[in-house]
Image 1 (spheres, helix red, strand yellow):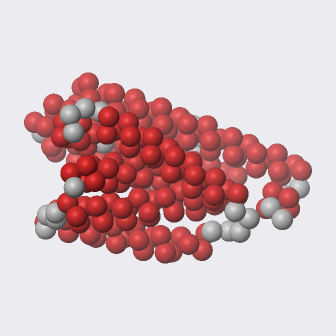
Image 2 (image 1 turned 180 degrees about the vertical axis):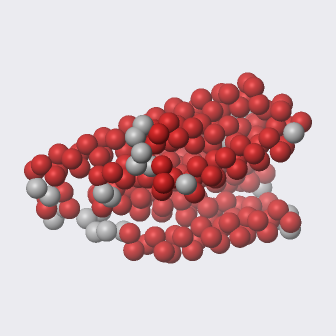
Length: 225
């Protein structure tokens, strides 16, 4: 029996509203990220190159919004504004990465391929997570361990540069972790409280954003191999 089958009709209506909010916010996050990418390319890319501290400052603001999201996510309309701001900043901070890959591979074809692959993987894993009758929340601990491992290895990679083979392994692991996160977080939508729509949308957004980053890195590494 699906979880929705156990919810009273009035409560089920509220749940449908929750889903609508999450999907609408998720769509809005893609648009605001696109706006951030546009602003970054047209107004900030040169400034990032001349003064990298600016990019780190924007990234810091992005992290602050993430770590404080538990405090503002239920405050209307502040939550909507800060959610859009966060996703737009994410679009801005990814501009140097996109620009570097476009320059290395002679155009934006690699970006489009990564976007297409991200869409296919995210949609496939999301459908799998949504249609699964069982709760997949138990996998969260395993995935968090994988995420922490990625963070530690990524930080080490700053100080101990690795070759292309290691980049393939690392990026492939990142794709796997965030593909599984997409499946689990889509499954988790069935178990959120009604007022947690912002947090649910943030989780899905982080999944697809990081999935794109790792697919782009993996595509680039395979192209160099």
